[in-house]
Length: 256
Picture 1 (cartoon, rainbow, N blue to C red):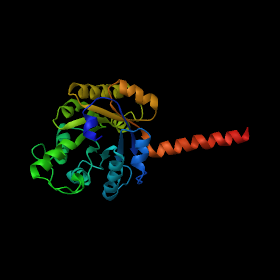
Picture 2 (picture 1 turned 90 degrees about the vertical axis):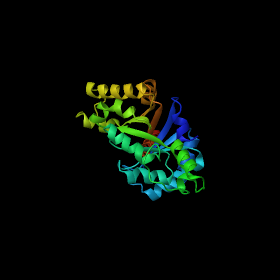
Picture 3 (picture 1 turned 120 degrees about the horizontal axis):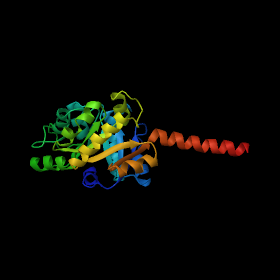
Picture 4 (picture 1 turned 60 degrees about the vertical axis):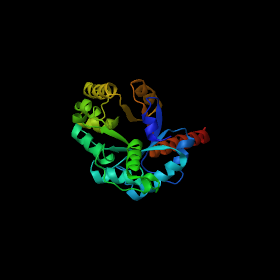
């Protein structure tokens, strides 16, 4: 199921954050685990566009939708990821309606946006089609996800969510707390007020919502608040914490 199909429903979608392991089997591993999507991060991972191009094929082979976070908001970041085959695009620090509109312009072809035309390449599986049909198909497939992780972004959430072409508001909770001057204080009234604005904006305009969660309890709680894209932990932490727990259990058992 493609990302656009997932965006068409507010039913729960569970995914995983990929920031370290761009291995050929990663898509199949996540699919076998029951994931609906992968969040492939280029901002903090160091993954190159060459790596992205290969990784997208791994997810396609597994039939797993993928959201790609590029390192910046610039057109060459977003449009290039689209040309690699990314169907869900997310850029950091979207704080204004103008920045959100610029995202739409970079991701969508005419008449919905201003994306530079490159056809019969990776994003359309190297197939030839009439130009108007190819552009319309690409626009139907691509989704724009605005990462709200600044105080200004939360303040402008309603204007961002109102933009035609924006499909989802994604909360970057750590950066949002830092921007609010309360690093990591997620129960602080300032943070809660910002969350209320984001959630209210998404619901008002019928947009999806997503965020990363550290544990299953958070995932359940945020889904009840209306978050339909729940990204559970990440590849590094699942491996590290699972292995650490098992190693400790074995060592403690041997000592007993």
